[in-house]
Image (cartoon, rainbow, N blue to C red; front, top):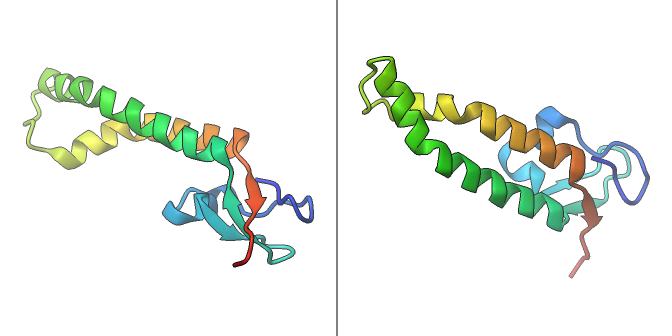
Length: 102
């Protein structure tokens, strides 16, 4: 993610993918407050919808390998590739805009 103020990399991917940093952060170089642009929010919504649509397939995968379906944490592990791909696409195609002070 490039900072619109200084043109440098504002945040690393490992820091960006941690929860709130994707939506609001400070540039590591110029310290300006940044907020996510529309493409980051759209990517987040699409990633959530894809992950939710894959939940029935996670149940089928658990049943195929004779795992008890009650293992809800394992379902999340099955969905991690879709979530990671969504995060990588958000990082590559998303961006920030400068947050206006109030």
